[in-house]
Length: 220
Image (cartoon, one colour):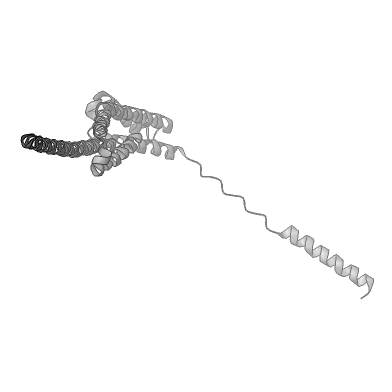
């Protein structure tokens, strides 16, 4: 092959490569995260307030802070009125409603759940005094499980599961206390009975020894 022909082929190859690079498709840009609209923000705040209110109604908690509950309802109603008119105002009203509803739940926790929690802790302490973990393992472990579940619900500010969990834990710890106490009393009674039997045996042995001594003295 002539040198000129090789030069021509080389130039064509270079030209094709340049054209391929120039026409290669550019990588598509990554999609941007969706922009949260005012409507979505309003709906999110509304749902949050509704969720808190439903929890109060379902567990009958309004009685613990009726004024706060009424204030929450007033703010929620204002949010409903502004929902289609002014998104910022609606969001603020829903947030204020949620704040009032949370105060109702907090007050209910202070007056009911925290008391039930303290009762469960006291019951566990009584069970520990009689070593119920070993003497009554089944009800004691059940109490531990219920208490742990109640603690988890309490952290989530979930009223009904936390209250029921603490009350159930107290019942289990009370049962463990009773079972362990009864077993301990029976064990003590058995030990006392054994001690009395040993004492009677020793007394009998002593009586026999005394009789033998008397007979030996008579023979002398």
